[in-house]
Length: 105
Image (cartoon, rainbow, N blue to C red; front, side):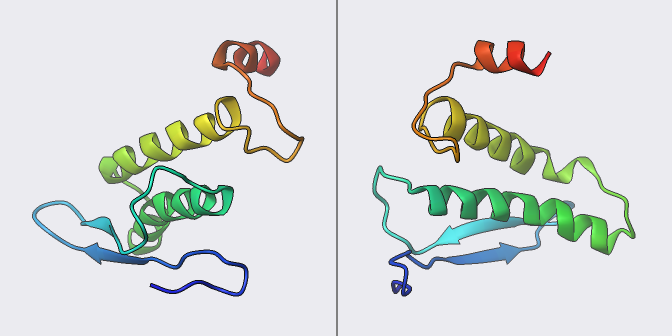
């Protein structure tokens, strides 16, 4: 594992096909600490969405329920980034999910 010029930690992600499913992704490397930077969180969101994107490419625009777990994890992380971690472009803020629901209406 090595740092980039911006100080971001690089990790390896291994994708593996198995069983009747199309496969999965495993995080390899990186340090296993309790802190997650905004760049690291965005990288995890990107990785979570890669399975769905690959599926659409391989299935000529179609997709299956195979990425449901990835989509759920990405949704939870994105919501936590805004509502709990203050990882927004509009400054430091912590918003509860109920407030976000009312603003969306």
